[in-house]
Length: 287
Image 1 (cartoon, rainbow, N blue to C red):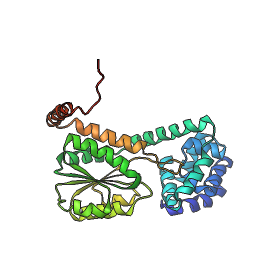
Image 2 (tube, rainbow, N blue to C red):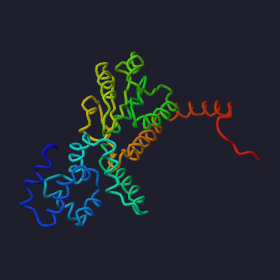
Image 3 (cartoon, one colour):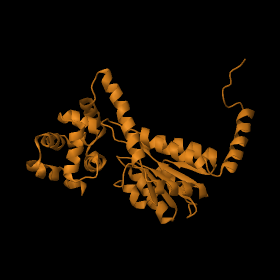
Image 4 (cartoon, helix red, strand yellow):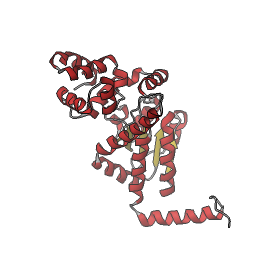
């Protein structure tokens, strides 16, 4: 089911819907931007129906689950929203009271749960193996995704010592000039996707390097270049994306990798601990 037809399809099916389903449909058609970011509970609240009714509505439309419907809605509208519009949307969705604060935590929990439930374990293991076998690891991330890239590169470099972060398209191609098919490029990109990340990944594909995409869905433009793709939910009705679930995915990947080649990794970490002690890197409480 193509995402551009979602709203038209909902509108076309309204005459066949029950009264409660029409409430949901009416809210989505009138508020496609905010609906794309809402959890089942929030959509139910906005449409004044139960969560079970929302689930039945999704089934009625022919989707496999709420996440599928939400992703098509999300992909069809997110490119139309700028930062100011998303900030205005968050004010409309989240209440001003303390309850609104906890709703944000709940949305992050929902993103982690969705990421965990939809994780493709085969691709996860394949991505881990590519990293373990890589001669060099290049992590490509731009704009807000740089925060994820810094975290990933920091720990991969502690473990292997062969990774670097590429976050500037101006110097990217010079830094990645030695790239070969023995190397791995990890591209991190979430909506709104940056053109420079896509251009760098396209270059990596030309060099026949293994490409691991960490992104939000199969509809992300970097997946067309990826050898494997790992998806993490980042939906939040706010001016910013939630990187809690992507960070959790990266944390899981690093921890999983750390369990392999344990002897080599342990020896490297022991040497680093000696170095850190020698130069008094970490604070130590004095007696």
